[in-house]
Length: 224
Image 1 (cartoon, helix red, strand yellow):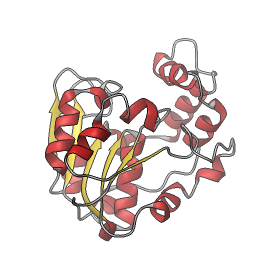
Image 2 (cartoon, helix red, strand yellow):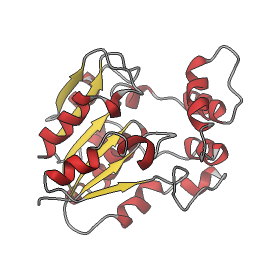
Image 3 (cartoon, rainbow, N blue to C red):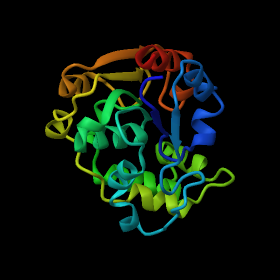
């Protein structure tokens, strides 16, 4: 059976929109894996849908407290990958193998201004020519989304995640990144993790990553 596998979606995503359509939960079950797919606070069917950013400040600690006892593997995409790496740096003994996708150099160059830009897009306040922020706004406007909760999630105080935190991670890590993903390049993250392995998805952009067969293959091969 091996370790249970926690799955964390990206910003504006959910279990229903990210993991269920691809069949990855069933494929992991076929490999004998217990899956723990989680809707992060502010997303999907999560209980917390606060519009106050401060209510999301301890996101990682609350998620750690909710995980099964004993070693656990993890899969994270985009914001979920950042959260997963943060948790693995806080309690490295809790985690086995990790797969993080849609992250790379963006983890080191992210600025508060960019976070506010995305939050404004989600809140419907993006600049007229800001197509990047507007993309997040379109995802946030889909049925069942709470734009105010998503904006608050983005405006929360993020847990620190730099070279010193990443150096604490003892898990084998697979980094999956599309060649057209704005989060790249992957090299700074690979270097900071030390023993990570890169799986490159040719021609794949950020938002297409969770549904790409190359991503699914990487998850199954790494955790199988």
